[in-house]
Length: 466
Image (tube, rainbow, N blue to C red; front, side, top):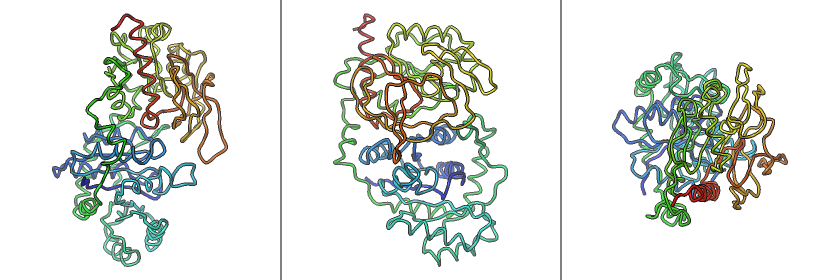
């Protein structure tokens, strides 16, 4: 299939990738193009900007979570009905697993998908050195996939000279520049950028940025680079075939299962691909708010409590006593539950908020949690020899990123850091519960999702369902 595509990356984090990616996609959409957007790595918040602000469907592409065939299939499936696919990189272009490899880097995704990369180069305080930096990035790998550069935070008066110098010295096209825009920034907090709905006049900021980019970027050159990307083939890909089978339900799942999924300001870190896979396997996902709904949706067969910011909404969560009590009662009666990071904290007895105030939570798990003021564990892990919901699943790739710690993190599995000797015990695992700090990506090991739904089916039958 022919998929015009670009990957936007940079030399390091904090280079303006998300803002410029969103501004470009907004510009492309204003030109009438149907845009599919993607984010390299395990990040939750950047895809929210792609999806919420610009209205494009967005998902993650992570070469640690999945094999190459699955990554290509996910990319192709979400790009087939679009005119252009835009991928936002992660960290620096070559920064990958363990801090010492290129695995799961933006470069790795460009390599796997054969996507032309555009390097955003921070031009502040430099001139000729920019050419050396660009040449170094292009030469670092025999096939770097870098097809162009954009000079960020550059004075308009310098552009023509810098473009001529860089192209003469490196042979890489300079596809425009972005001037310093003091009123067009995205603020951050402890887990990353503020959420899109928290940024004042975000749509206005992006429209202003897109107006600027229309004048300062070689938009036609970017579109030509995307259009020149090689054809994309997944015809013999087993993951692609599985995703496109007419039969969507797992053969062992005999009915649609009603799964409640927490979705509000406190629980918003959700991989779109996880939801789609659960639906393929036979789930009907029912959203609810632990903050504002007085009770769970009726007739649930399972419950999903993913991550987010419960620490910022601890009071509302605690004061919704009827919801807390019902969740605890349902869990005691055997309702299967997956709870990740923030969802895990919600199941504890006590959560201490960012101001140091302690609030009662669900109490389904003993212990309390509090902010440690620094990242506790950060990055990729592999959960070894996982048995989930009473069924063996094998090794499961996962990710952790949290400033909070809990008195009772669980000891069901061994988590091992890649490219390291570090390991530790983590997570609670029973016939009806999987809970802890690690975030899971179900395409990394579909058995976790399948085992969860099998437990949900058993619960449905135990409650008199057919």
